Length: 477
Image (cartoon, rainbow, N blue to C red; front, side, top):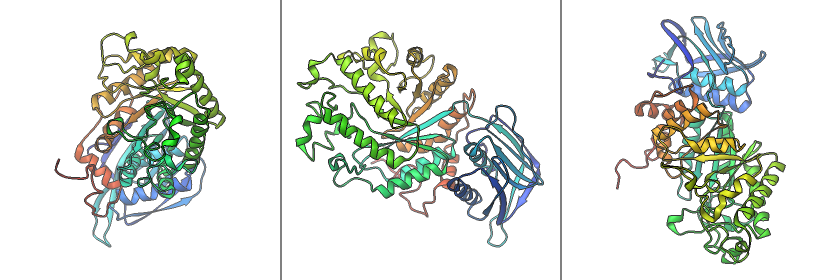
């Protein structure tokens, strides 16, 4: 291989550097089972992992899900998602489906070694190798925020890394940056992205075989702005819409029928943007001002909350999707002993709503201070009958520990989060992917310089200082 490690490391891999398959500036491969978008992605990956000096021509044909150069023949074993083989006669990758085939090709291109990059003399080789691989966690998602000051190229880089490092889903959350037609005041007047820009992000994710999960916070975080900065995307523009919210504006008013109508219109536009999919993320965390208006406070809070979320669940399921919600409003901190547990359900006794909730809801258990031992909240939620995804943030031990728990507990999956720390994701994505992908991967391969190399292979900055790497400046100011 070219770098010291493969990212993420395959379950089974051997390499014999004494035997080589050699190729030059042009290569032809037979391929079957890839979508047109994924086929184009394969050609781009081949070109960039051969230092922009070798072009791949794909010839459609054959059965199943295969990629073949020459006469090599990879064979799937029981439990494999993909298998890869390189010998002196050629290259072969086979997958159980189109996405698995793409994952195998992502491993393959990391094996490309350049020997001569002079124009007209291009020469490369792949050492003889064999890999058999499958993920430890089937649902592998990562959540990206599009803030008003987010640079689109950083989201593009993040999606490239997520796709190449074998994630299955991308969650996109818009913080006043989506241009809703149903209510223009839902976007900052001077900071929204265009629909064509956002469609390009979705297409990029799809080219890696990933599904894009739309997200709209439909309980707390109604300002679509970070609480510590005092903004409100709607009320800073149109205060006549105040009755859609609790008095402080932080939480949607669950008693107002206009709220449910508007939230449904928002979901419809986001679904249209993101295309076909199986999920919708409804947010629902940190709703500290819930049930404080003159209408909501007449109701029993947890009953109002359960009724509202169950209605949203019916709506989302009618749209052909399952809702995902953050867990914190549905657990009491006082029910757990000492330890770094996130649980906000003591506020208005919202934790009492848990037993009343529709079990089609997927709970996203975010425990950002958890560092090891045993994450008790995920097991509690699973015992209540909920499919549960574990959600670390950007501390490496937090990611490693929660990924280990997801495997140990048989959780539904993992949802990595980035929030306002997107540069940390760009830097540490290969480490996170190793934790999520591998079976029992306690110390996945990680090198900051090799992370930078992967990023250069995936995103062409054409020498732009600001677009290169993961920070926008070299000096903290």
